[in-house]
Amino acid sequence: MVRRRIPPGRDMPREARTVAAAAAAWLLVNLAACRLWDGKPPAQEETADLRAAVRIGDAAFGAPELERFFKSRMAEFPLQGETDEIRSALLESFIEQKLLLSAAGQRGVTIDEGAVRRSLASPADETGRRLSTDEEARRRRSVEESLKVERFVSEYVIKNLRVSEEECQEYYQEHLADFIRNDVVHVREILVDDLAQAEKIQASLKANRNRNFAELARLYSKAPTSVRGGDLGRFQRGELPGSLERAIFRLAPGTASRTITTEFGYHIFLVEERIPAHQQKFFEARREIEDKLLLERQRSAIDKEVAYLAQQTPVEIHPANLGFRYTGTRFPAQREVNP
Image 1 (cartoon, helix red, strand yellow):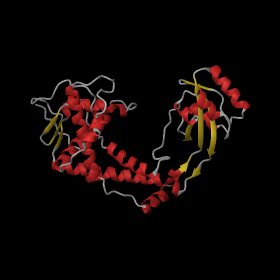
Image 2 (image 1 turned 180 degrees about the vertical axis):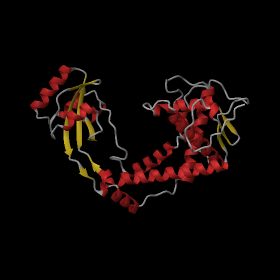
Image 3 (image 1 turned 90 degrees about the horizontal axis):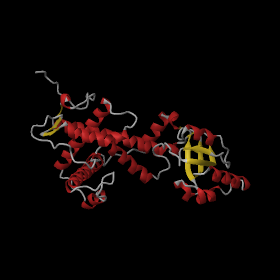
Image 4 (image 1 turned 45 degrees about the vertical axis):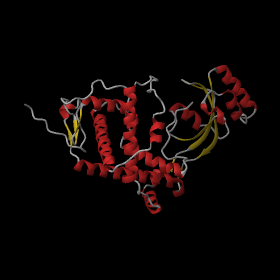
């Protein structure tokens, strides 16, 4: 088993890439409310005497609601930690979601009940705990809001955005250095739990000059790739953990590695093919460029829509009630007056 870092947009059909670009733009605005819900009831429901941390139009939101939002999203930032900058970015995402949800309602956006049911297929939360009736109701509301905003963004904000061939060509010419592809290797693996078994596999590979690698992978490997004869796919330099990269990239095509020990067990790798570093031609980079430019265009359109909505619906951030220092600039923070 190898944990790889995959560059976006590689080895993907054009239709899937276009959908992926739109989905990425969607995720950028942090609107997936069905993922924001943590399956747990609020520690305290907001009441009329709530000290508002954020006001959006006539709606007030307190620190407890924001904390639930932050908690559901903080897993996306495992290395950064719960810094003021991360919380400020998530706060702005929360405000975006509420503004776009309001706009969806004003447009009369409706959602498909079948899509809601599919999103609610599991009656349990992420820990496997079965949800109460109230929790299921809250979860359903979150899913409905998420789908409604998603449809609004797709149909009214980014629907007609396109990137032309000429724009892709121009970007390619201006960023040639970005499209120098590192060495690439096509790799197979065998992963077992026992060193003695790995040594037997090594002996069989040596006797058959590695021609039986895929067969041995299907028979003995415990990795998910075993059903594909151990096929891990292609890797560029920099995508594999350091120790594995050093061992794999020194192999010539058709040769197998020595047995390598990791936390997962005993690995044997085979390099099937090697492609030297080279300057990618435009046709190789075109899809990646199209996705990048489309994603930027969609993000810009969403930002403009949110800025317009914020002009129509007053947004106020009350720093004293947040519980952290707001460092963002997209929405106004009220100056607190000391009594």
